Structures are given as structure tokens and as C-alpha cells.
Amino acid sequence: MYRSGTSIHDLQRGHFAVTRPVGVSTLMMALWMTTSSPPDTTTLARHTGQVIGGLGGGAMSANYTFPIGFVKHMDFNGIGCPGSGRDRSFSGRLAAHRNRGVSWRPLMSDRVTVTVTDGVADVRLNRPDKLNALDRAMFEALVATGTRLAEERSLRAVVLSGNGRGFCAGLDFPSFAAETAAGRPAGSLLRRAEGDVANFAQQAVHVWTRLPVPVVAAVHGVAFGGGLQLALGADIRFVAPDAQLSVMEIKWGLVPDMTGTQTLRHLARLDVFKELVFTGRIVSGSEAVGLGLATHVSDAPLDAALALAREIAARSPDAIRAAKRLLDAAVTSTLEDGLRLEESTQRSVLGGANRAEAVRANFEKRAPKFQDPPR
Image (cartoon, rainbow, N blue to C red; front, side):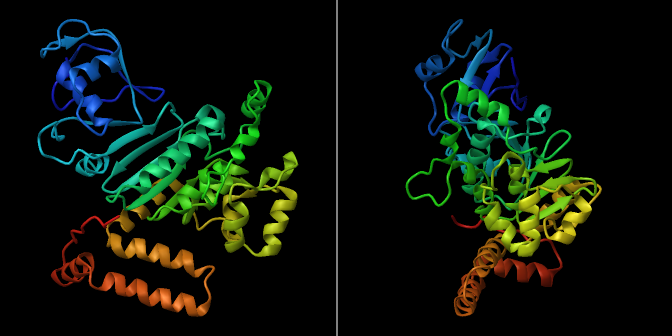
């Protein structure tokens, strides 16, 4: 039986799997952690599908799987229990554990992993055998993960990287060819929900651009096509000197269509942008900085990105979020609108508790203790 304080961390394609005898109270806690309200024993039985022995505080045996929206790998010790009076919302549960580290993955997918530590989300594409190529499950996982992170008041910064030998090799054409042969057209990626500015494929990048906190990409190996556009959706990019980057859509008779035309036009000169799109030329990480595709070259881009994210996380979250909104708007605003927005943004943070805490901490020569910003 698992003891209090033991991490439960087995993941089977988006399901929380218990593969040893486990106390009923622990199983109920696991199910409650994934839902909005505490489960009763009937709910527990429905989700496990089978009960061996009694439910009166005994143990369940064999394999039990919980289908959940987001799996969280965390220490159960100290989490608010049903009836404890603690915050049972997802945000409350995540905030309570942000100093220990929290991991979760989108429903029915192992494509993206997330670990949150001290307000910094370490987000990794997790399909290393395919160089993190973008199949439908990866698109869905990117959108779901970014959407969930956007809800977190305790979030301070995000680092986006890829597991294995590369950041992202771009679209997984064989997987979509197989879907088409099976009668599911790849064009469904281009569907646009009513009221959305981006279609589904674009959302896989746009969701990171729209996050209220800074996103830092760490690029190694390849970043081709949609993979490069994903990196361009970040606010800051660290690249390995031998990384390979390409707007590769032209190779397949396509144009960049995952927000790349909207991000790269603000980063590179138009003539440079056109050359890259027209040719699909592969550039190194070292060259990418000079062209505007990257911010810094680093032999250890993930370490550098995490270090910067931690530095950002130590600043006032009100000021950081306000600065991102202001700078993103400044790119397309008129001079008059930009100056007015600058003024209104400054007014919005001047009287805040976090601004006062920043001032006090500076005068008292100590680390500040900031509050989570409101939604």
C-alpha cells in the first residue's frame, strides 16, 4: 500500500495507473485531484470499473486506471482533502505545490510533459523517437497545455523545449497521410472555432504567444517548419550553435501557416524573411541570431533558458505581465495609442501591493515576497 507522502507517478497515455495494492482513501484522493469535487465510493467504483474487497478503508488490488483531464505527478502529503476547507480548485492545488514541483500531461497524450517549480513551467515536447514531429496528438497536447497554463495565477515564466535529439522536426507528414487514407482529412487542422482568431494548427503556436507570462524557447538539434514557428512563438529564444533552423514548408509545396508570417515579420528584415521562405534554407544557431531568428547562442540552451526564467520569476508578476502586454501591443499600435497604453499600464501597477513589496524589498535588501496576480 502506498504510504502518505509517496509520489504516485505512473502514467499510461494520459491515464493515472495504479499497479500495486492501494488504500481506498489514496485512490479517492487521486480521483478527487482530477475532478472539481470529492468523489464518493460509487464514483470511485465507476471510474475503477472493479472493486476487490470492501470499500470500508480496505485496499484495492490489481490494475486500476483513472481517465483524467490532466495527470499531476505530485506528493499527496499535505494536499487539501475533501472537507478540509483547503482550496480544491486546480489552481489552488497547483499553487500549493509549486515550490515542490508539479507535473501533468494532457488527456490521452504523452506528447508534452510539464513540471512547474517555483512558478517556472518546464514544458517539453516528448516524442523523441520522431524528433518531436507534429502529429495530431502533439497539436492537441500543445493547445491543451498552453490553455491550462494560461489559467494559472501562480505561473511566472515558461520554458519550452524538446526532449531527445532535437526541438521539433515540423509536421509529421506520414501520420497525416495515414489519417487521410483512413478517411480523416488533414484539413481538419485548419478548422477555426467561432470567435477564434487562429485556426487549430495556428493555436498550437498562438497559445504560447498569448500566454500572460514570458515564454523562453530552448532550441537544440532541428527546428524545421512548424517546429521553427513554434520557437518563434516564444518571447525569447536560446539556440545551440549547431542547431538547424529552417522555414521548410516550401520543400513540400506549402507556405508557413502556423503564425510564422506574423511572428517572423517582426523579427527579421523582410528581404531576409522572403529568402528563408522562398528557399527553405537551413541556417545554424549561430547564424540565426544574426538573422533575427534567435536571441542568444548557448552551448546549453535549456540551462540558459531555465536560468533566465528563474530570474524573471523573481520579479514582480504584475510588472512582468503588464510589460509583456505593453510590448506586444506596441508592435502594432500607433504612436498615440502606444503612449496612452504605456501610461495606463504604468498607472495599473503603481498602486499595487507587489509594486510596494518590490520597493520595500529593495530598501530592506532582501528577496521580495510577491502575491499571485489576479486573473
